[in-house]
Length: 176
Image (cartoon, rainbow, N blue to C red; front, side):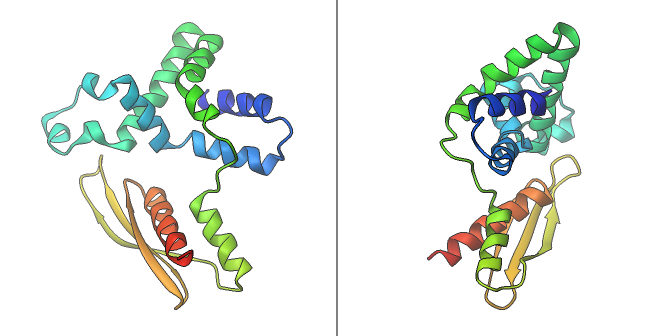
């Protein structure tokens, strides 16, 4: 429901943009961390029923858990009140994010890949440096390198988030 609502909305709002730009906008708006951010804005963490271990591990602050809860709330709105109510719910919660996108964002991993190609470098290589934390709230450290030219690390609550952080860090380093 979230993806469909955002996709329709972006198509209506930015109908003259090419598909690739709309995809970039969509991908930036429906991620787990964005869903977690929305959940925090709604005050969801205060309403979570968690076991002692999960509370002690900080599960109420986990992007993974809050993102999943936000998606479940959207699904519940759809099941209990129908598609129009769920669509309204999403639009109300994501409105500032849609309005805040002046141009289509470039995902750091894509931007790094394009930088490497434009500079005749091998594609970026990602490697897990560390995985820590409990199963429900993991923490990953990823290293990205462009051959022997440069490397950087990033952390996140998923491999993808850590890879994104590493790519952003390496891009920042390359642009200095």
